[in-house]
Image (tube, rainbow over all chains, first blue to last red; front, side, top):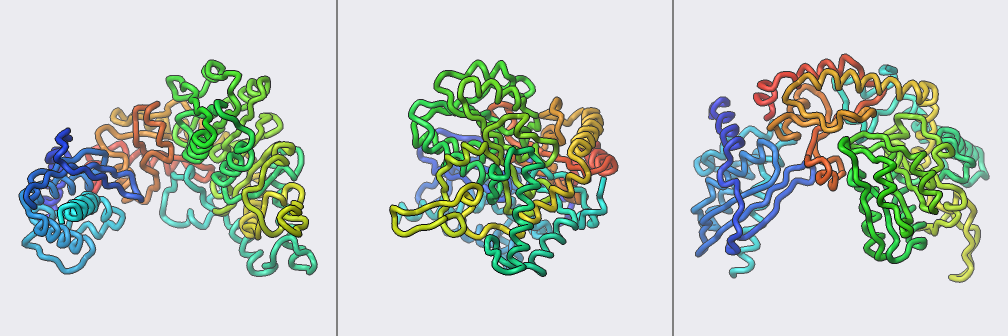
Length: 144
Length: 398
């Protein structure tokens, strides 16, 4: 992906993040994700019905990379089943850690394919995914 | 000034995070290496020459600290692992047995975590009450505001002399005078003051003072607990072990050594303490008043320039210390710090361990510049030049 386009997508998602809002609906699972090494701190709210992610909202304070990554993750994961979502997260993390991954799957999240060049920002990009894994694992534990 | 003394400054970086830790001059590093390479023995074992040498150097640092802060005697100087450990020792070793249900502990919302959380736990365990001095519009402590919340139940006032985000200097001398009229103890966190200005414990008349070596050109892992002798005598050691006992036979017959050894159980951080001694000698040679004056000028220079940038909000405009906390409008502090890092400028973003400060300032996270005497106007020019171009910040923040 062209650097200029990547930049535009990150900027757009940072300035106008998708679903940056909260809900009082108790059907949503709530999970916090923060980085020990920095000040990024977000809350995710996730609605899962019949094994499928129907909605994700988020709130909190985070840097441009974390915010954009959360916004993109939300768009990509809504309407995925739990195994599909975990698969996506697996590929995303593989990309961040410079391992083999499936480019076809990652959609807009590919904007972070060279974030490994800035080592101190890898944790920013993966922050929402850490929270998502925590939430999905908890959901699976309670629904098995 | 004195930039050539610091190996770290030979790298192409501009270090503006001295509130977190300071660089070490070569003399401090050499002094510690000398211990490890030429007389590396334990302390308090003066039976052979190199151990005697250790004792001399170790105790020499105690003398240096005593003179540096003008304590009455060297028994009043205890070496710890750092200011955090010193504060915890005061809370757990002294106040644990000197506080009762309903007693009040006065702090502020701009204290560092290590001068907050130990008091929180003490208050919780002893059913004591934490009270906060209301800060003025510049987030400073005033005697009037303190007077307003002191009651007959007030037992402790625990304050940083200079705070680590706002950088304001508290009127500790007046606070001590006021407190002592009413038998209130005053605990001073000197982490951000002792490295930057002359601190005289007898003049202040504080009961306890804590600080860390690593913020004052010394090594990590060493700190000082100063306390008035009769108060230190009353501390229940939280660590028991070798070096600090006189004799022991059974659980009823344990005799402890006198101060200061009584509060320094186990093999101490010998190299660190000796390094702290070298750091104090180094600072003395420059002169603390000269350091304070230099930093004040540098701060003014920085503030004058930053103030001209319309989209920069300075949180602590009126403080006098070398700490400047700011935000760039609509840009997350961490993104600003990352941007500056591209140009090898080190500033810190975050809440700086003052997590309850946000309710005072309304600002949760900031970028913090903290100066030391080796910073220069040229470095500030470079910083300001980078901050003066908002388009560039946005274009290069990731």
